[in-house]
Image (cartoon, rainbow, N blue to C red; front, top):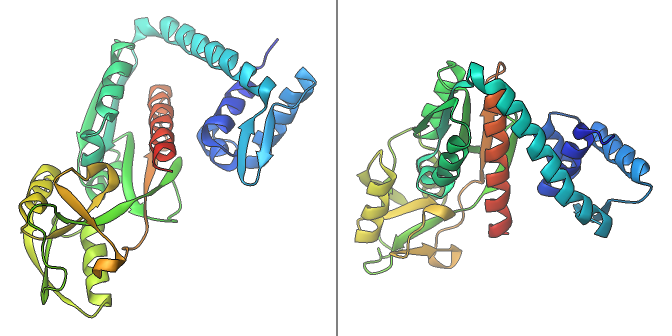
Length: 287
């Protein structure tokens, strides 16, 4: 008999590329996950993973097992969902940043919901400071939010790539005396990072355009009203990325964190797994 928990840990290690992040995904310590993989390798009598530096990749046998493991885990989840469906899955209140809402994450969530008619999903796209507040108030069950890199807590976290941007057609002169900034209202991580970077360089600044809408900020940058800081997935063809050569050094590092309430339901944790896989895929494409 194959142990589904061992298979789940194996799949998580392969998807996450390492034991530490896999442990966060399956809510186990790194040493526990390592022991589970060893048990699985002992059961099959052959190595399933190769360690290449900090990266973990499947062996040829591991690749063969991976396909079957995914099918078995999917079948087990489907069985559980079918048996639980008459009672309904309840409501999951999810918060996501606006740039992720504009990305293909919404399509993924819609597909997930179609496969689970007994679950109601309440999605809220907002600034990270608002999502964090609502999560702490238990007004959200799960949130994907931005925070300074290295901050503790949460299910998992991924480094975020952010850039200074200007208009491609009407670029702002990088050497202008007072830097015109475009950003979200006070409290935004990007806004604070932009102001800190400008002041650290000994330059002056002023807010040229403030909006609580990502679309409004993107449009203002494209029109040439000022400079902004956007995540890589929010940069549009009408924008031009600025670098240190233009006089704009990178801002403080940020990350995307997945956080849930302590009393998260099984349905909430299934959506958390979905979001973790999504963020892993975005990170892999950007690497």
